[in-house]
Image (cartoon, rainbow, N blue to C red; front, top):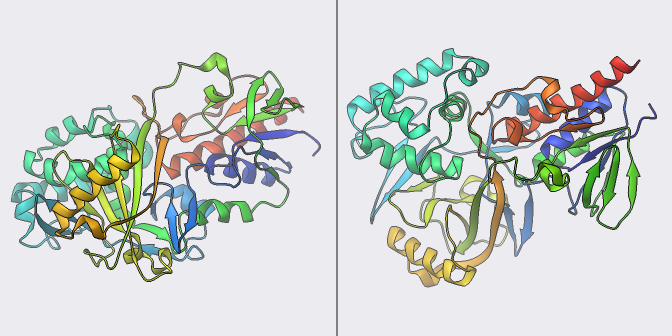
Length: 414
């Protein structure tokens, strides 16, 4: 088909939209501002390390991931379910709190929660496994912190497990995120595994890209704005399109939409190298309390490919900080010394990433939307997880829906 369909943004939503448009017989064109695909899902190679842009994982239970990705070909390396809890100078392991709350936790669970919490976990896992994803998102929305208390969980387990674990997923400290997202994520962790591709999260968009055969990709091509059917590039060039899929947050390219979207969640990800891991397991470390460090993980414990120089690679997540980089590094290494017992001088800084648009914050998250809701004019369509809820699964879902809407618009025309 000769129709000129442009996609703005080569993140997961844009790539999936292109895939679906190709299946329908179109040859779309993607305009990407950066030098590669992936959007927020990217991996750098620096000093013998693989550095993901922010600590990210792929849940193997995500329906859209199963649809668009060859999980075996990604050579996924799974995290051991559970967590290492760092509480002051003490630390202990909680094994598999979602899959086998009564059997696998062991006696150390008493430090995390009560016996009643174990029973509540069992009941919640059983209940959510029986619900479809659509049923979960059709339920009333509560702040997650309120939802957990309404479920009957103790303040002990909320403080020691739920808060550090889920604020690292939601990227906000107070668990104000909707209970719909909590239930969906909780269910996904109960059904699937948290994993990373052996060679970094950037392999996910690269796998999508390799599936494209009729799509043209233009990198380093930032879009200034979209007006009607016209795309204006930052260099002043004007492009006339038949259809446009905006696979970035639209207020970036449509000034008239500014102020219509909630401020996104931000996160800072710092990488350090050490002679060896002080966890020595493919597990996430959760830090209780109100310090800078929320969670940490040695990425080479999960996949050896993350370090090719013999040193351990530590990923640290900081949720809220206004400190300049040098001061932040000093403060974080001091915290790491307190929780690990390893002198701060041994933590060699590698790189930091501040992701200003890490996740959308949504008051009314939805699992899916009708095609009509991603259409803002006869020629412009939207895609992105901000339309649904923040996740890899939602980004892919939104790309598919936008492509279906474009295809449907031509069916009506003909």
